[in-house]
Length: 336
Ligand code: NAD
Ligand code: MG
Image (tube, rainbow, N blue to C red):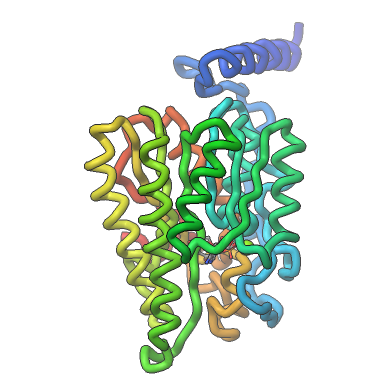
């Protein structure tokens, strides 16, 4: 037998073993000891991260808020064709807000490929994006639940959690990811209504949804909140948004201390510049959008697919000792 035959037969054996294990105990599909599960097979080829995705300058474009990923140029990569799962979340039940597009969509696709059933929340105007995600989840043979509605409403937030719990038959993973970001050059241009809108979406909804979810979460459950690099390095044109992201970091760390007693982990993810609908629907000035990500050491924005693995890790039992943490992915700029 030549070495290639040995490695491919061992690979098949290990893949089979991983599937069997996952089906019973949802164990991580990593091999034990010092052997990687895939023995190097199927790993994407090494490549320069600066050139693995589109770089600025980007085409001028604008969409009415909240924007659709399906109308962006270039279309973001949410892992639709690239994300490969290995049963790391087999049988789990997840609710993701803002799961129709961007970072939330990438997390939804990854979770389904890792074996989870997924409920997504989004705004009614985003039905076209949401349908694509629902189809992708179902293609994996997983349950997909679509729950449109505006999370600035407390009663809806409670209803959202209730519907997700009923449809999924429980809840193990909550991803508070929906967000409102509108660029204003001056604080003098931010009306009380705008300020309230940003805080209601980014903070009140997070509070309401988390509060409604906790009584349903079993030991081992995971809460993941999307913060931002703006929590540490606020952009001058996003002062209202940035303060909410700093608050999300603080809330995640404080809640993690409280939830330890329930065996629930709480973490945050702090993305840098990611190519999503939020950025083309009022989230940036046109000047910044055209050069989006150019000022990072990797010279380009991230694609949502590039941050999905962080959401998978934080949801999975592989990160059982990780709580109260903030995971960054920002192309090398702005994190502490
Ligand atoms: P996105 O526009 O694709 O996703 C944001 C989602 O928020 C929308 O799809 C929408 O469904 C949801 N949303 C907004 N207001 C809502 C409301 N009132 N009710 C219900 N849903 C509402 O953009 P994204 O960049 O993927 O954003 C996801 C998260 O990532 C946000 O919290 C954002 O602040 C954060 N983030 C993004 C970046 C970036 O550069 N794209 C950087 C740091 C943090
Ligand atoms: Mg959207």
